[in-house]
Image (cartoon, rainbow, N blue to C red; front, side, top):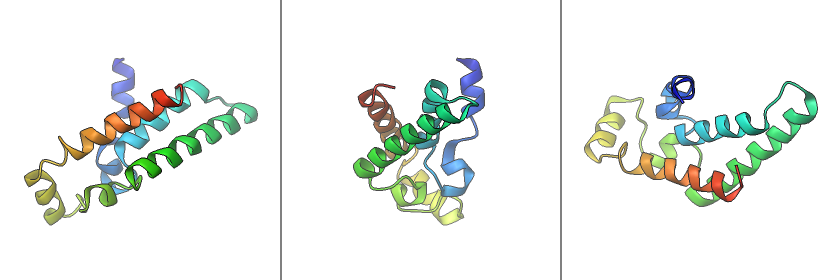
Length: 109
């Protein structure tokens, strides 16, 4: 558990650039843990499973991009102020983590 938390600790805030949602990044790590390998056949399966997850997440949440999901760019002072004032990190972000976990569960990961 500690190793997983350490490995994933840099994923938040769209990997610090308001790009891919940290919940999506974390889910991709879970998929890699189950399906990842260093051989081509397993890597292809892992890629397919990752694409399946991303498609479903995007359909449910509208995007996989942090700034699109939040409606602001948290890498800017104005965007970060808005996110903090509106408590996006404890509401919207938490909802995205729950959504990602539910999708993983629905897809039997």
